[in-house]
Amino acid sequence: MKTAWTRLETKPDAVREEARLTGGGDTVLLDSCGRGRYTVLAWDPVWKGVFHHGDQPDVFRVLDDLLSDMTALKAPSDAPPFLTGVLGCLGYELAWDLERIAPPKKRMTSVPDAVLMIPGKVLVTDGETDAAWVTVTVREGDPERELEQLVRKLTSEKNREPSGRKMPVEILRPMTPEIGREEYMHRVLRVQEYIGRGDIYQANLAYRVEGEMRGDPRGLFEALRKTNPGAWSAFLRFPGFSVLSSSPEQFLRWERGFIETRPIKGTRPRGENPAEDRHYREELKMSEKDRAELVMIVDLERNDFGKFCKTGSIRVPELFTIEAHPTVWHQVARVTGRFPEETGPGQIFRHVFPGGSITGAPKLRSMQVIHEVEKSRRGFYTGSIGYADPRGTGEWNIAIRTMTWTGGETGTLSYHVGGGIVADSDPLLEYEETRAKGRGMEEAIRQWAAKGMKV
Image 1: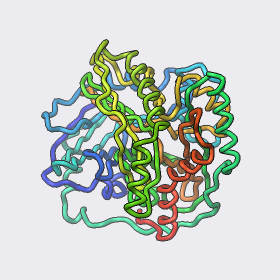
Image 2 (image 1 turned 90 degrees about the vertical axis):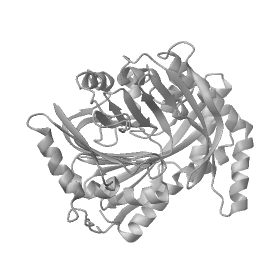
Image 3 (image 1 turned 45 degrees about the horizontal axis):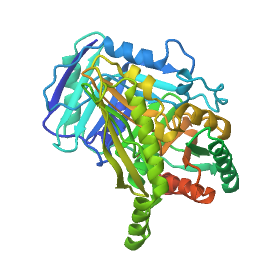
C-alpha cells in the first residue's frame, strides 16, 4: 500500500462533510463534539475485516498483524495522532475469546462482534489549531493524484455548498425496555447475593431498550451529538448496520510507550435549575459509595496495566474528578503507565479488554455474574470504538451511550443502559440512574422523529 498526505490551509467540517464525501459507504467518524481536540473521518477502505467470537486468528491478532505490516508515516511533530492505520469497533462479547466464560447469549441480529478497516481516505480536523490533515492510501496506483483530487473537492467553494436532504422519520415500534423497573430491581438483588457470598465486590448491570424506526441513522446521530455530545462520540456505517455513540468515557489512549485510561464510576442527573444542579454535583462529590466504587475500579485498572506496563511506572494522577455532561454528572479517575514500545495494540487489548468500569471487580467473576443475570447479549455496548496508528498512537472509547441500528431505511434501533452495583446499592436508585443515563438518547430520538433530520 502507498500513502500520501497533506495539511490544508482551511478546515472543513468533518461531521458536515461525512454524507457528501462517503456516499453512504463504509465509514468511521470519530467525533469529539467540540469537547475534545481531534475529529477523524475515515472512509473508502482499502481493507476491511468482519469478525465474530471464535474466529481464528482472532481480531486482536489481526490488529497487530495489520499494523506491523504498515509503514509509519514520517509526519511533523504537530501532526495529529491518527493519519492512517486501523479503525473500527470491538463488541463486548469478544471477551469470550480472552476469558473462560459460559457460551455467549444468543445473537439477536446479524451484527458482527467486530469490524476493522484500513481507510483509503482520511480527514482529520484539529479543534485547537483549526488545522486539517488529509490522507489517501491506495493498494495500487498513485496516491498523490487521488490526494490532489480529494483536496480539490474539500476546498472548492462549489463543493462546500450545503448538501443533504430531510428524510421523513417514522417510529414503527416505540423504544421499549426489555425489563421494567421491578425486574431490574430484582436483578440488582441477585447481584447483591453474589456480593454477599464474597464472589464479587461489584458488577455492572445493564438492560436493553429496543424499537423499530424508518429513517436514516445518520440523521439520528446528528440529533444525538446535539442532545448528548461526548468527547469520544462516533458514527460507524457498514452494510446492514450502523453504530451511533456519544460516549463520555475514554477507555485507552497511548502514544509511543505511554498509556492512560479514564474510568467513570459515579453518576448523578443534572438539575433543572442551578441550585438543584449544584446539589447533585455536591452529592456525587461526597458519596462514599461512589468513591469506593471508583477506587475498586482504579485498582482493577492498575492491575490490568501491571500485566504489560513497566514495573513502577503506573500512576493515578487524578482521582474523584467531577465532570459535567449535558444530562449527568460523572466521577472520573485517570490511570497512567509506560510500556515497551514494541507492544502491539492487540496485545494491550488482551490484557485490559473489556474495560473494568463496565464489568466490575474482580473482572472475570463479575463478567460471569453479568452473563447469568443480564437478559441479552450486549453487542457493541461496553465494547470499544477507536483507532490505532502505526506511529505508535491510539485512542479508544468505552462504548456507552451507544446505539445500534440494524437494517436499511427501516431498521431496529437498540441501546443498553446500566450501572455499577455494590453491597449497599439501593435498587430503586440504581434503576433511576439507568434512566438518567438514557435521557440523552431518548431526547435525540424524540427530536429526530419530530423534525426529520438532514442526512
